[in-house]
Image 1 (cartoon, rainbow over the protein chains, first blue to last red):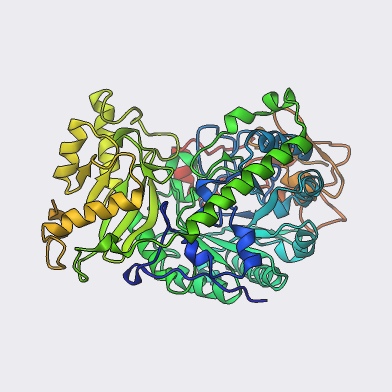
Image 2 (image 1 turned 180 degrees about the vertical axis):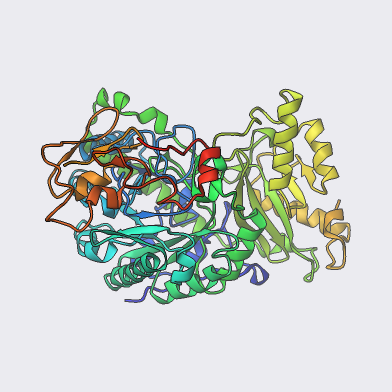
Length: 501
Length: 92
């Protein structure tokens, strides 16, 4: 069965959105048949809208892997880093189940349980499927997901279907073995380690076969790709077309993370990471063919909570061991909370947005990128305290969520640590410079408050700080600022984009 | 004859699942090979399975202490870079 792919137009064509972003716009999800929409409306990793309300967790029961990726280091146990493939402790299936029940009782918004590593879940079939089997019996109100590199996927598709796992993510970085050989040095296949192009060819074949088998069974598939400059950047457009044709529902292009201190091949070889602008350009280029996911936070393989937050520290095994969980009672509470959220979302979807938000803006005004220190859909954060900026594009068609850019990236090596605009001068310097680099391409930064020093430096960099819309809904604030800029006549395409007021 | 696991092991379980003799067991600080069970996969496979799936260079050695996966052999990271990052060893 070929799943209809949700619409997600390129920026020039505009696109609708609700009051809290539209990476995968809620009205776009509305085009899906009801049974598919029902599957994603409370899934934070599939629906941009849902990720503001529903939480997910990963349990790290799958440490083994059957391939090597050049962006991965199998020494996975770092407690400070937040990136895929990293966990604090590997759990047995029994521990994992206790953890899931404890978290689900404590955080009723947690609707989704994924197994995503730190290795490949399907290279750990016994541990992975035991966990799924027990959870589907004991916690039938939790959605089950699995992420895989795809190598063992064809042989496990039937078991995936059997355990009612209806969301699968496959990481597909290429469809050409020559490209693959630059990303995957080897795979373990039929009792041998196979290097280079031959290994990549087998991996690609299995990924594509598995993808087709899943969509044939009506299982929702999201494809993750790591954007690796100079290796698969152009190639990912082809990947996007092919996975869409095979029925994948969403494509999530993520930036390569390659710091030398992570000890990965790309890190040690100082392979460049993509700039936020490169990532956005590629996402936009793929968006003509494929629904793109833009709200992924590249979380750990043991993350707990809403996307962008990690409450894993509250649920370490020593804490869980002493928790008493009555899951039957928890399920009743959870149902009430879920229904309330869905009702709220449905109500919001029904509201027709006033069309006059762009009035007074010339139809040919050029689009402007703005960075927002936002939280829960409003302009909420102090500039120096923002852990990430949400990037919006304002145009005569309205405000559109484009991406998020992290400020506190990953761990290790960074000597800049502090509150940005208030602590000691050395730290302020580098964190500020970093933030300004991260905001490249943006003309305005919206935040609740900002210090004197960063204000000056942002202005010098051609980015106008704006603290006048604190606690206002993000889209309204973005459009209000866009209107102000339009009123100065600085939005005609000929005007230098760095000189807006 | 038996293979051994060194302190380079990161406890990823990959070898445990592929060993045809159930010769590998969990221990602290890392997994170990039961020498009485290990056959180096002779008769079962053309190559020792633990060494064929192990993602960590220098983690598996033979009786003479020779690395089955020497530095640089799995990642392709050049020796000079491995030395620079303290990831290179001559022998176990």
